Image 1: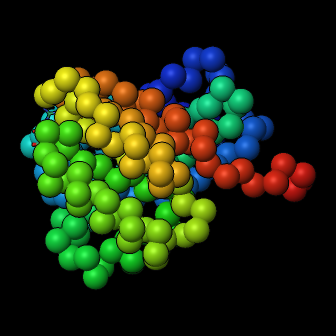
Image 2: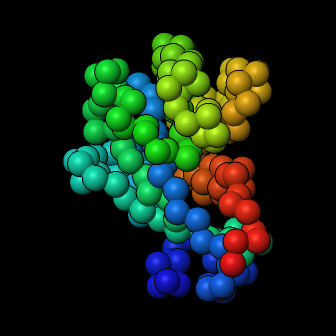
Image 3: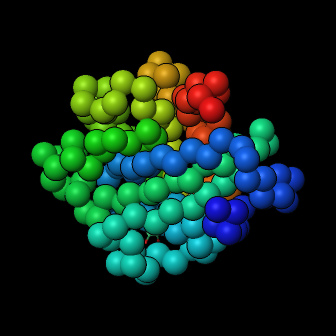
Length: 189
Ligand code: GDP
Protein backbone atom coordinates (compact mmCIF):
# COMPACT_ATOMS: atom_id res chain seq x y z
CA UNK A 1 0.00 0.00 0.00
CA UNK A 2 1.06 3.58 -0.52
CA UNK A 3 0.77 4.19 3.18
CA UNK A 4 4.23 2.83 3.70
CA UNK A 5 5.93 5.15 1.24
CA UNK A 6 6.84 7.63 3.93
CA UNK A 7 10.12 9.32 4.23
CA UNK A 8 12.18 9.42 1.13
CA UNK A 9 12.11 11.53 -1.98
CA UNK A 10 8.70 10.39 -3.03
CA UNK A 11 7.49 13.78 -4.15
CA UNK A 12 7.99 13.12 -7.86
CA UNK A 13 6.26 9.76 -7.96
CA UNK A 14 3.42 10.81 -5.67
CA UNK A 15 2.71 7.29 -4.43
CA UNK A 16 1.78 5.55 -7.68
CA UNK A 17 0.10 2.25 -6.78
CA UNK A 18 0.01 0.32 -10.06
CA UNK A 19 3.75 0.20 -10.62
CA UNK A 20 5.85 -2.88 -10.00
CA UNK A 21 6.43 -3.28 -6.32
CA UNK A 22 9.58 -5.10 -5.37
CA UNK A 23 10.28 -6.50 -1.94
CA UNK A 24 13.85 -7.48 -1.26
CA UNK A 25 15.93 -8.82 1.58
CA UNK A 26 19.02 -6.70 2.16
CA UNK A 27 21.88 -7.80 4.39
CA UNK A 28 24.82 -5.84 5.74
CA UNK A 29 28.20 -7.46 6.20
CA UNK A 30 31.40 -6.04 7.60
CA UNK A 31 33.46 -5.77 10.73
CA UNK A 32 31.87 -4.78 13.99
CA UNK A 33 32.11 -1.02 14.44
CA UNK A 34 32.21 0.05 10.78
CA UNK A 35 28.79 1.67 11.12
CA UNK A 36 26.31 -0.86 9.71
CA UNK A 37 23.62 -0.13 12.29
CA UNK A 38 24.17 3.60 11.96
CA UNK A 39 23.70 3.42 8.18
CA UNK A 40 20.41 1.58 8.61
CA UNK A 41 19.15 3.96 11.28
CA UNK A 42 20.16 6.98 9.22
CA UNK A 43 18.26 5.60 6.25
CA UNK A 44 15.15 4.36 8.04
CA UNK A 45 14.80 6.92 10.80
CA UNK A 46 16.76 9.84 9.40
CA UNK A 47 18.94 10.15 12.44
CA UNK A 48 22.41 9.40 13.70
CA UNK A 49 22.26 7.75 17.07
CA UNK A 50 25.22 5.55 17.81
CA UNK A 51 23.67 4.42 21.08
CA UNK A 52 20.45 2.94 19.72
CA UNK A 53 21.97 -0.21 18.31
CA UNK A 54 19.99 -2.58 20.54
CA UNK A 55 16.75 -1.43 18.95
CA UNK A 56 17.55 -3.28 15.71
CA UNK A 57 19.03 -6.55 16.85
CA UNK A 58 16.76 -9.50 16.41
CA UNK A 59 14.58 -8.71 13.43
CA UNK A 60 14.63 -6.45 10.44
CA UNK A 61 13.65 -2.90 9.69
CA UNK A 62 11.91 -2.08 6.47
CA UNK A 63 11.75 0.99 4.32
CA UNK A 64 10.18 1.60 0.92
CA UNK A 65 11.47 3.95 -1.73
CA UNK A 66 10.09 4.95 -5.09
CA UNK A 67 12.34 5.11 -8.12
CA UNK A 68 11.88 7.55 -10.96
CA UNK A 69 10.28 4.87 -13.16
CA UNK A 70 7.61 4.53 -10.45
CA UNK A 71 8.83 1.16 -9.30
CA UNK A 72 8.69 0.87 -5.54
CA UNK A 73 11.29 -1.09 -3.68
CA UNK A 74 10.68 -2.27 -0.16
CA UNK A 75 13.92 -3.10 1.58
CA UNK A 76 13.76 -5.61 4.39
CA UNK A 77 17.03 -4.80 6.09
CA UNK A 78 18.71 -7.36 8.30
CA UNK A 79 21.37 -6.25 10.68
CA UNK A 80 24.02 -8.73 11.70
CA UNK A 81 23.26 -8.36 15.41
CA UNK A 82 26.86 -9.27 16.10
CA UNK A 83 26.93 -12.29 13.80
CA UNK A 84 30.11 -11.01 12.16
CA UNK A 85 31.81 -12.84 15.00
CA UNK A 86 30.38 -16.17 13.93
CA UNK A 87 31.30 -16.76 10.31
CA UNK A 88 29.58 -20.15 10.33
CA UNK A 89 26.18 -18.50 10.78
CA UNK A 90 26.61 -16.22 7.82
CA UNK A 91 25.04 -18.49 5.17
CA UNK A 92 21.79 -18.52 7.16
CA UNK A 93 21.92 -14.79 7.45
CA UNK A 94 22.34 -14.03 3.77
CA UNK A 95 20.15 -16.80 2.40
CA UNK A 96 17.51 -15.27 0.15
CA UNK A 97 19.18 -11.88 0.12
CA UNK A 98 18.81 -9.95 -3.14
CA UNK A 99 21.15 -7.20 -1.97
CA UNK A 100 24.28 -7.17 0.19
CA UNK A 101 26.07 -4.13 1.47
CA UNK A 102 29.66 -4.92 2.36
CA UNK A 103 30.70 -2.12 4.66
CA UNK A 104 34.15 -0.97 5.77
CA UNK A 105 35.47 2.05 7.62
CA UNK A 106 37.57 4.21 5.27
CA UNK A 107 39.96 5.01 8.12
CA UNK A 108 40.68 1.35 8.83
CA UNK A 109 42.59 -0.82 6.32
CA UNK A 110 41.83 -3.84 8.49
CA UNK A 111 38.11 -3.44 7.89
CA UNK A 112 38.75 -3.09 4.15
CA UNK A 113 40.59 -6.42 4.17
CA UNK A 114 37.71 -7.99 6.04
CA UNK A 115 35.28 -6.61 3.47
CA UNK A 116 37.14 -8.55 0.79
CA UNK A 117 36.69 -11.71 2.83
CA UNK A 118 32.92 -11.17 2.90
CA UNK A 119 32.80 -10.55 -0.84
CA UNK A 120 34.49 -13.89 -1.45
CA UNK A 121 32.06 -15.58 0.93
CA UNK A 122 29.11 -14.16 -0.97
CA UNK A 123 30.61 -15.13 -4.32
CA UNK A 124 30.93 -18.67 -3.04
CA UNK A 125 27.73 -19.11 -1.06
CA UNK A 126 25.37 -16.24 -1.92
CA UNK A 127 22.69 -16.17 -4.57
CA UNK A 128 24.36 -15.92 -8.01
CA UNK A 129 22.39 -12.81 -8.93
CA UNK A 130 22.86 -10.99 -5.62
CA UNK A 131 23.52 -7.28 -6.12
CA UNK A 132 26.45 -6.07 -4.05
CA UNK A 133 27.59 -2.64 -2.93
CA UNK A 134 30.96 -1.95 -1.41
CA UNK A 135 30.37 0.83 1.09
CA UNK A 136 33.21 2.92 2.53
CA UNK A 137 31.60 4.46 5.61
CA UNK A 138 32.80 7.28 7.91
CA UNK A 139 33.68 9.39 4.90
CA UNK A 140 33.35 12.44 7.16
CA UNK A 141 36.55 11.47 8.95
CA UNK A 142 38.99 11.69 6.04
CA UNK A 143 39.44 13.18 2.64
CA UNK A 144 37.64 10.86 0.27
CA UNK A 145 39.84 8.02 -0.82
CA UNK A 146 39.52 5.66 -3.71
CA UNK A 147 40.65 2.50 -2.03
CA UNK A 148 37.48 0.64 -2.82
CA UNK A 149 36.79 1.60 -6.40
CA UNK A 150 39.21 -0.69 -8.14
CA UNK A 151 38.27 -3.67 -6.01
CA UNK A 152 34.56 -3.02 -6.47
CA UNK A 153 34.86 -2.77 -10.24
CA UNK A 154 36.84 -5.98 -10.47
CA UNK A 155 34.13 -7.77 -8.53
CA UNK A 156 31.13 -6.29 -10.28
CA UNK A 157 30.04 -4.28 -7.27
CA UNK A 158 28.58 -0.82 -6.94
CA UNK A 159 30.95 1.43 -4.95
CA UNK A 160 30.10 4.40 -2.75
CA UNK A 161 31.50 6.25 0.24
CA UNK A 162 28.98 7.23 2.91
CA UNK A 163 28.67 8.94 6.24
CA UNK A 164 25.93 7.80 8.57
CA UNK A 165 26.95 10.75 10.73
CA UNK A 166 26.42 13.52 8.19
CA UNK A 167 23.94 11.55 6.02
CA UNK A 168 26.22 11.99 3.01
CA UNK A 169 25.31 9.48 0.27
CA UNK A 170 23.06 7.33 2.48
CA UNK A 171 19.90 7.74 0.40
CA UNK A 172 21.97 7.52 -2.77
CA UNK A 173 23.34 4.16 -1.63
CA UNK A 174 19.85 2.66 -1.39
CA UNK A 175 18.55 4.32 -4.54
CA UNK A 176 21.49 3.33 -6.69
CA UNK A 177 21.43 -0.27 -5.52
CA UNK A 178 17.67 -0.46 -6.10
CA UNK A 179 18.20 0.59 -9.72
CA UNK A 180 20.60 -2.30 -10.17
CA UNK A 181 18.18 -5.02 -9.04
CA UNK A 182 17.26 -7.62 -11.62
CA UNK A 183 13.66 -6.97 -12.65
CA UNK A 184 11.00 -9.60 -12.92
CA UNK A 185 9.66 -10.00 -16.47
CA UNK A 186 7.12 -7.23 -17.13
CA UNK A 187 4.71 -9.39 -19.17
CA UNK A 188 3.45 -11.36 -16.17
CA UNK A 189 -0.02 -9.80 -15.75
P1 GDP B 1 28.28 -1.79 13.45
O1 GDP B 1 28.91 -2.61 14.52
O2 GDP B 1 28.94 -2.03 12.12
O3 GDP B 1 26.79 -1.90 13.36
O4 GDP B 1 28.63 -0.26 13.79
P2 GDP B 1 27.71 0.85 14.50
O5 GDP B 1 26.63 1.28 13.57
O6 GDP B 1 27.33 0.38 15.84
O7 GDP B 1 28.76 2.05 14.60
C1 GDP B 1 29.93 1.94 15.36
C2 GDP B 1 30.36 3.33 15.76
O8 GDP B 1 30.88 4.03 14.62
C3 GDP B 1 29.19 4.16 16.26
O9 GDP B 1 29.23 4.24 17.65
C4 GDP B 1 29.38 5.52 15.68
O10 GDP B 1 29.86 6.41 16.64
C5 GDP B 1 30.45 5.36 14.63
N1 GDP B 1 29.96 5.71 13.29
C6 GDP B 1 29.07 5.04 12.53
N2 GDP B 1 28.93 5.64 11.34
C7 GDP B 1 29.74 6.71 11.33
C8 GDP B 1 30.08 7.73 10.37
O11 GDP B 1 29.58 7.77 9.25
N3 GDP B 1 31.01 8.65 10.76
C9 GDP B 1 31.59 8.65 11.97
N4 GDP B 1 32.46 9.61 12.24
N5 GDP B 1 31.31 7.71 12.90
C10 GDP B 1 30.42 6.76 12.58
